[in-house]
Image 1 (cartoon, helix red, strand yellow):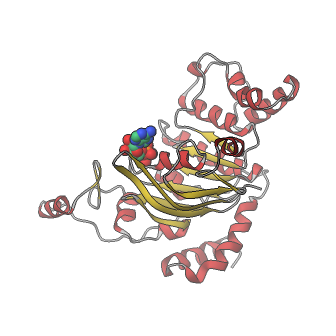
Image 2 (cartoon, protein in one colour):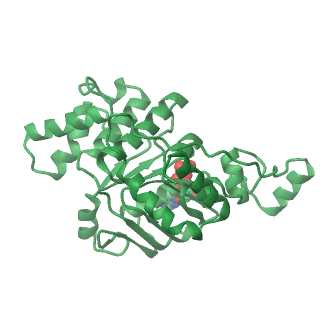
Amino acid sequence: MGIEVVVEGLTKTFGRQNIWQDLTLTLPPGEVSVMLGPSGTGKTVFLKSLVGLIRPEEGSVLIDGVDMVNSREKDVYEARKLFGLMFQDGALFGSMSLFDNIAFPLREHTRKKESEIRRIVMERIDMVGMLGSEGKLPGEISGGMRKRAGLARALVLDPKIILCDEPDSGLDPVRTSYVSQLLIDLNAQIDATMLIVTHNLDIAATVPDNMGMLFRRSLVTFGPREVLLTSDEPVVEQFLNGRRAGPIGMSEEKDQATIDREALHGIVVGEATERRIVPQLEPTPGLPVRQAALRRRERVLGMLSTLPPAAQRAITASFAAEGQP
Ligand SMILES: Nc1ncnc2c1ncn2[C@@H]1O[C@H](COP(=O)(O)OP(=O)(O)OP(=O)(O)O)[C@@H](O)[C@H]1O
């Protein structure tokens, strides 16, 4: 099973620019979480902070007893092996075949024999549906395939935590839904903790167990998906509806003067519309039941009375629809 990630009081500044402050959240073990947020709110910086590639000034990130913020580089390096990272462009080496790209972490970090490496690499290539393409160079395949190859590479060291930075960027809507299904299928197969950073509303609506959103240097919310999906916070409303009216502007956020000026010109925040929550994706038939979904159900039922009423109603309705009242 995946590992819990406990983030407490995290604050990061570059020079005089405060990226975010006092972020506190827990990624439940083995569950899939999504972090939303307008461009530039520091989602990538957050992912890099979890793996210790960026060191925030304050706070802690506890993973299996190691604090990725305050520990010695040697310990952080060791703990980093628990992670699988999938970056926006797949981050593949252009002159290496897909096979060699995917084998790279195994050759770099383990002493496995070539025959064993071949077995693992082919198994992961199969998992992401790319058997037959292993001899190709990254330049010879589409963006969607490069993403999947990046995901296969993230999987070779049997990660306990998988971080995906915008798995949908540059993909058409059809390829994006394949990636969404792939993420859920992988979760069912390996039960790793997953955090996905995305702007994509379809991924956000259908993939995660938990959702959070970064805005104005803090976490607007983080918790079971239904909390964000039923939230009437103006920034969440605006983001989920892709509207111009609201606190998010072209360069991240608007000041009050801009909001007032827009109101004068008739650009007003719309009425809060009742949002329909679409069901979460299920693993492809034939794959194991997602253990995280079973654990989440118990966890969420245990915290139900602490959640906002709209989220409680949505959760009760979705459990009832699954035939598990
Ligand atoms: N190494 C760095 N040095 C200085 N500033 C940085 C560094 N890395 C990121 N930043 C700044 O931190 C801010 C947040 O960047 P980040 O890439 O995390 O945003 P994001 O939310 O992932 O954006 P997007 O959705 O557009 O990818 C930006 O203003 C960026 O310029």
